[in-house]
Length: 264
Image (tube, rainbow, N blue to C red):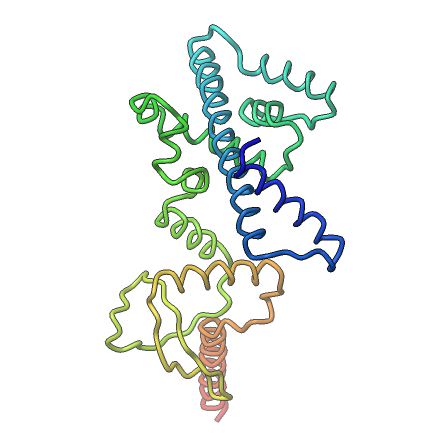
């Protein structure tokens, strides 16, 4: 054992003792040296993770290509992996990418399995040519920003999907007013700073920031799904109903006048 390793080992031993006893002296150097040891373990673990992910991607892409050529059936391989998983008390999987990840990585929790499996699937489905040209899945993955970047949807796609979902819901209210010169066109989505009064709603400002509009739209969807929106008054609908009743009443009054004239 060299001097550096010995010092680190002693620092690590001090840290372990200090966890159970306040009497053990721990210096800043002990902390810093221990963190360096942990960093080495952490970077090694990440490096190994990417290496394994690289191999899993290689196997997955091979299975998919052979399945497309009708030389192998991914369904058959998935069934076999599920049987092997049963023997090791590993949860079964409904698709080949999840079956591969779950079996290779063993006891990962479900969310992590899903993250890795989606990454493998997205990489092959959307970026197979780029990865093939790169020559190494792991290096390509690092270059684009890692698993999270690979799994994240483009902002415009998230925006459109969110607004589509919001607009599929029943409107809580419909009001008509002129926003003035606020650069808001028809079909634009914006936030209004409003105050509710007895006479109606007063609008004090308009916010067209895309991030804030998107965040509020997501929250609105969540709120609508957990609350009863039937208590809201649809103003335009109520106005139409009142107008129809008034028209009907006027029609009846006109008929009464005609009846009275004929009676006289």
